[in-house]
Image (cartoon, rainbow, N blue to C red):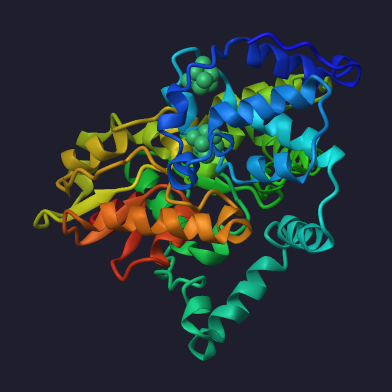
Length: 407
Ligand code: SF4
Ligand code: SF4
């Protein structure tokens, strides 16, 4: 697709990057068929090809307004369209650029500015954990709709002693330690069982994805640089086997640090090295089947389903490996329909686009529960919390399932 950049866009790096991405699009529309928002709304402009066209028009200098902003807002950034696209269009990067440019051109109503600002600040603030604990204490007094937003989590249990020479760093993150403290502890115990000690560096924090997906590129880079500064002294010691990120929504972001800071001379090299070290847990565990089996208690097989988060299957292109390991370790993993579709969580999407998010949740819960599982497993804190709000079945991180079977 040929794009004639308007003068304002021709003078920006973002404009040229978007132009390069758009050049690959042949407008075939294959991506439209697998787009969840197009499937729900049936409007070309709520599918990838339509959004691509809207962004092209903006870059060429056509007027943009609330309508364009709304169609871009409705995108889940699930990147299902990237998986489908035969031409390799980097839609995820394109929508990031498109949103930033629209944000700078189209003022939002005050209520939206307030809500988005509150999310940017609140979810990544040190006040989130105490506020969440207070909310949980008051949970019994709340209406069921609010109770569903505050899922009950398992206790964390003990963190293993630092007994191995091989070590990994775990992302500290933002909401996960307060919402589901058991996930990090379970990750550390599973990694300990295969020979890695895990460490969370106190000065690290949110990966930056919350602000990034709310079109606050500069705010996101503050989080990114803070994490690099926190991890770098450890990385320089030379014994860090990986930076393990057990929330796939954050993992895909940390793996992108090199790209995000490639034009920052002070950080580009360190960011690229950190990105190379970033690992989804399955990347360290896929070939540790024998070691895991030796440390696991024999239990009767359990029928489970696995929801592969979009950030894992479409963002990081990791597909089928978690399911294969779970089967090798004794789980009966039932196949599900439409595993490629988003559950509707998508970061802050469930708050900003509640009706679309709920419709996707209903569909996803239907397909996950159809095979009659005893438990739903996944790999991203957002998906786990969102799915738990739509079903009475237990919804856990797959590493918690594994951890429970360690002896
Ligand atoms: S599938 Fe790829 S090339 Fe075809 S319209 Fe979609 S983005 Fe463009
Ligand atoms: S990222 Fe997901 S919601 Fe957005 S256009 Fe692509 S498939 Fe549709």
